[in-house]
Image (cartoon, rainbow, N blue to C red; front, side, top):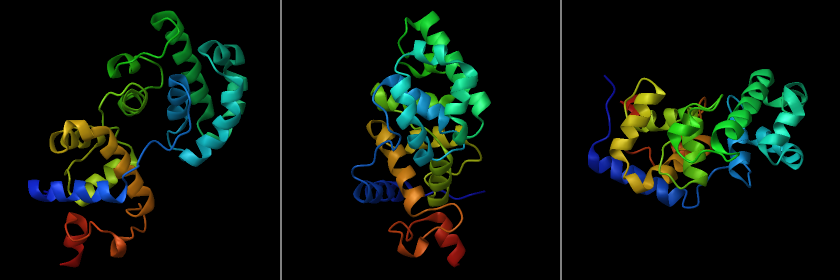
Length: 215
């Protein structure tokens, strides 16, 4: 069974992350709630850098749910092709826009539960949108959050659902959203998937994974 950090060590880890990334925030570019919803759907198995390049032009053409519907799946698919899985993503974006109009008065719903009723919106996407534009404290577990939190030992979980549940127990509620961003920043900059920069990581003295490999 994987070990986890002790309560005092968790506090130290969170403090170090806060010092390393005091200004951590979403790296997807957006202006409106709909922008972020679309960008987050596009970000599945795609980098934020690529998504931002695509949405720079897309958001000039589509400002409302009606704009996406009018564009149609085929044309939208061409616009977002470089993000990968474009057929599925274009179908989900237009499906979400249709439901936003038919069930939510043309406005992106403002709760995690309602967001998850939209096509293409799972819990991670709902958490991202809810936390960033509606101020709801949430921990969206993407590949970075899953990897980093389990490596460090904030949690010892086998999947994203259990990782989210575990983080919600050890991270103070009013820090859920910012901790999510800090874990992503750390995963992209230091605790990389293939070649983590453990030697220069300020968390290495308490990191469960690093300590286990040094024994």
